[in-house]
Image (tube, rainbow, N blue to C red; front, side, top):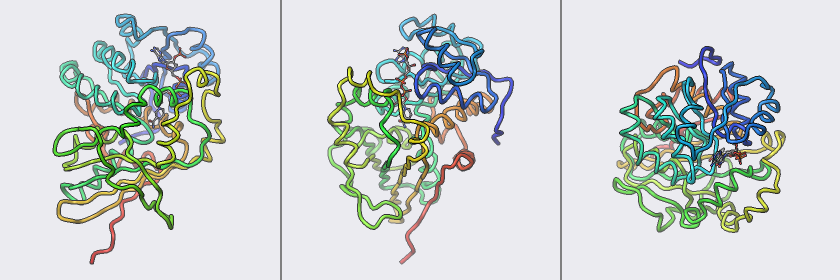
Length: 358
Ligand SMILES: NC(=O)c1ccc[n+]([C@@H]2O[C@H](COP(=O)([O-])OP(=O)(O)OC[C@H]3O[C@@H](n4cnc5c(N)ncnc54)[C@H](OP(=O)(O)O)[C@@H]3O)[C@@H](O)[C@H]2O)c1
């Protein structure tokens, strides 16, 4: 069972001076958990600590290129939360350092390629080191992965699972989100990976071109997208085919990426007011092998703030109640209903609906 405050625990935040990193440090402070701010620039770390209201928090300088230095910077911590995207470029180095240092590891990646690489590369090493690694502890992957587990518990083995993400409002994405999209633009253009008959393969077709969202009269155009949960859910749910979709407008915008030099000149991320006005809906349409259907729905606001809550709670649970060692999907690491109920206290709503019989 989770509690809302923790003492006697130290959690490192790598990329602590970034937009998401500062929200994570602030959430650790709110929870009463000691944070160690780690990054490659001492001045930026100091400014971040002051901006978040923890000017005296411990700060350590390390780069991903210096593996021994990174292991040293994580020493004495119970877990690390890696917020240093783009993750496909450098995220695995942090996982490697965490395993070498014997601490649990989560990250805020939404990048399908990175998440798959973590599962493919580190399972044995994490088990041998006795640490748990849970990539993609974000507003999207954790609730959807946990909800998929509950949907499958109700329907049994699934023939098809389609996850659709729709986000409205919230201002512009953070600079880090834009850099992650630029860094994985080929995967985005290709629609990412689907899971089919026991393996992952490039998406060649869309399971649907429009999805009717809860409470809306008309259908929303959608397109294939490399969603993280397509990598995590089939590890604990028996499903013949799983695919990810997002609103077609988002994929069109991402297909025309902002040049990197323009990204550098943008605000670091949305304002607090923009985040509060944002609304996200993640919809899971499931078809059981027996023909029964169900829809799981996650609703919330503030993707970055919710990610901070989720990443901190994930790292806290790994440190306080270790689920077993290895690279784990959210539902392999955490109790699904219990974690979702914890998120309910932070404004996230979830439900499972079944069409009336007959
Ligand atoms: N639902 C989701 O999928 C979701 C939700 C929230 C966040 N995210 C992801 O979280 C990531 C962070 O976003 P953000 O807006 O916080 O980005 P940001 O403001 O650009 O911050 C990135 C941080 O990572 C550090 N960093 C980057 N590359 C590094 C490297 N090679 N070595 C050391 N440090 C490095 C940066 O350090 P410097 O300042 O020294 O450059 C900075 O502290 C993005 O990938 C974003 O997509 C995903």
